[in-house]
Length: 243
Image (cartoon, rainbow, N blue to C red; front, side, top):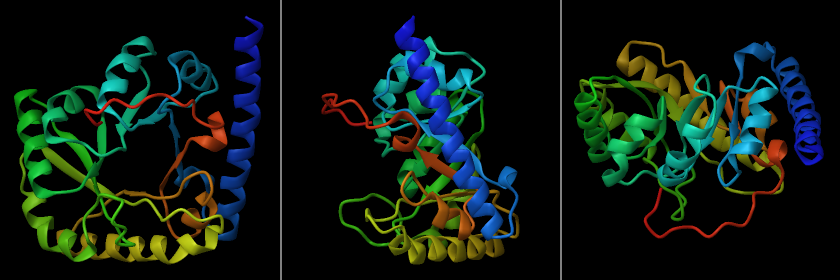
């Protein structure tokens, strides 16, 4: 019991720091804190730790792997919302549609088509984000910006998907300012997509523990925070079958 209480105390302190950072970034950019949604990235953390975070009022959690989420989500309160933020293989789409309220990592038209088919089988509509590899990193998944614009109409026509916005992961750097051009470019692409579709896209998912302030200043509506909340992730062996 002492260990559980200690975890809750540490998480509460970390969460206070994160919320203060969000508020300060919003003040600098003329925004209100409620215009930025905080996602707790819970990958590799056990259900008990996630439950302690949920007890502090957090409701949105992000997982990278379908297999881990399949084991974790049933052990936690049903009121929580779950997004998939890691690369999704097409053979895991059926499970992803059943587990997550949004898939943020849609990175190809074939993947979008398979998600739509699986959502149709479940008689549900699935909100998605299009993952964009703004920096063109070979180590990361995601659309090139011109590919997003070229494929947008086809994705939007899929009957069981709803495009809610864009997502990106900036290149890692100890200097948050190095991420600013990436976030600014995604925001500009986001506006182009809205113009092309003739409809607002409410979600711009960008920014993590190290660069959340810059992301907020550049227009993020959703930030994905793991380490700043939970601390360093446990070193768990990854299975070879992917997300």
